[in-house]
Image (cartoon, rainbow, N blue to C red; front, side, top):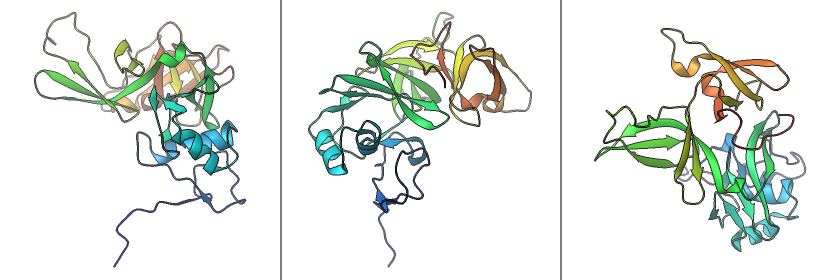
Length: 252
């Protein structure tokens, strides 16, 4: 009979290229558990503590740190060293009083140090939405979570309209919506995929073409250095209106 369960191991050679691990030093590496981010778009906590932050020398030490409840992800204690963290997740380590936000760069996913005030919220992109019972709408977010919003009075002109690809500023750990940032021109966007990954700036133009899906519309952004980049709308993560709501890398 064939094997019924999925493999629990991951060899280093096929692991995502942006993981900061030696490919030929050892055969195996920690495999992320099923969670809010896919294998290609995450970092396991063990690799974060051992290979990036250097708080542990071995996986055993990283597992001990996590099991003691010293690591918080988005304001919640995570006790498994293979828990996957991804884009915009906030990691807090109590013993050293340090906080990090995971951002995109040309090297992949990186940890960006942030202050305590900024660690109290995260940005989530709306990937899909569905109307459920009792006048509620379920918003599906990029980190695998969902939020229910009331749409009973959607016919009133003053109501907030949530569209896919918009961004929500969410409090941590309560996960309450603090602000909505629409996907439109003049707002700031971060490129999260493609050859210009990690670049960010003001959205100058969103081309609208009949017969083409909105997600595939061509977008032009301009950074502080007046450099222009083009990508598709699906690769843009809105991060602010007049300026980014989060601190960004000096050189993305």
